[in-house]
Image (tube, rainbow, N blue to C red; front, side, top):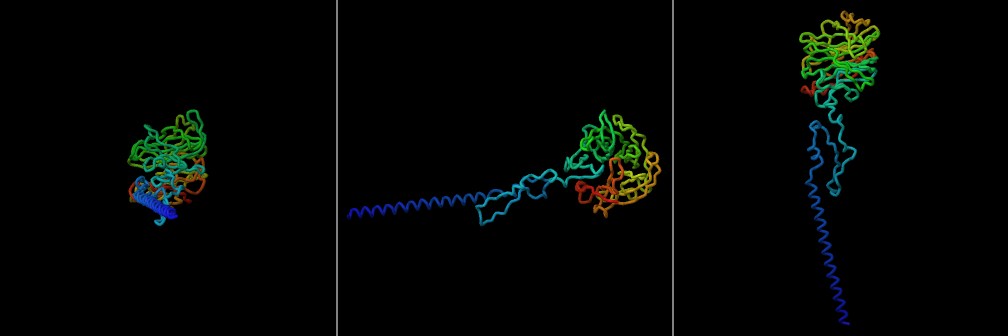
Length: 382
């Protein structure tokens, strides 16, 4: 009995010892897990933040933009929560979102509610004109050709035209050049059936030196097609007009030019024309003492003027017309310092569809490029 009790006490003692050992192991493992958690937390605090990652990849054109990824705040009291991203904001912005402020848009033309215009949308941040429609470049330069550097200043009419055996519904006149210094500009034609896909006809009016020729404006009256354009030599700026003899453009045939009479005390430049019955409307730059106002944008006008005259559609009569000024579109109308390169709201023939123009605007905000990025256009009634 005594031996039995002794063995019983010995078993109890062994059980106690085993229990203490098991508890020690559990405590050690628990501490190890705790230490690992602390180490993991310490390592995570050394990782660069999301904002740091974004800044290292920052596009210089987007230095003022917000980071692409938005980070939810993580509370210090809940260290176990992970940093998460809002998936709807992790997609890279489109090209237009990134560089809209490095784009210029000006010198529009309107045909039956559709607007084509001059822009660098295809090459944001670069000064490279192309002709655009709804944000898409529809006419660009041709390497090695007369229009290899810039194409701009479109004017479009509808009609029945042919070129190299194919028929087309639209005719565009545009300015092109192969120089970088705004000299020796020339005028070309292009044809299309949908306003998006254009076939170049070629150069139709060549340069005479100096600034050259450009700012074309097409219209039809009494079944005749007329091409108005600005000519700038080293000593004189004037506006001329020619009649298109045939709608077969395989070999373009234009009449001799006629000088459009100016309004007296000023000269005509950057003009667009529209017909309304027996009246001819003109919108053009306004010069002060034959100059543009001084300032960082001294190369463009501050006010766009609108004139009207009687015209029966005879080319020769343009030499003796008398212009009556009916409107002046300036900073008070648009809210912008410069107002230039306007166009009428026209139908397919060049008739006045509304008593309104699209006027190009600009503001003095910094250096040449900064000012250029402000070029836009807006509608103004008269």
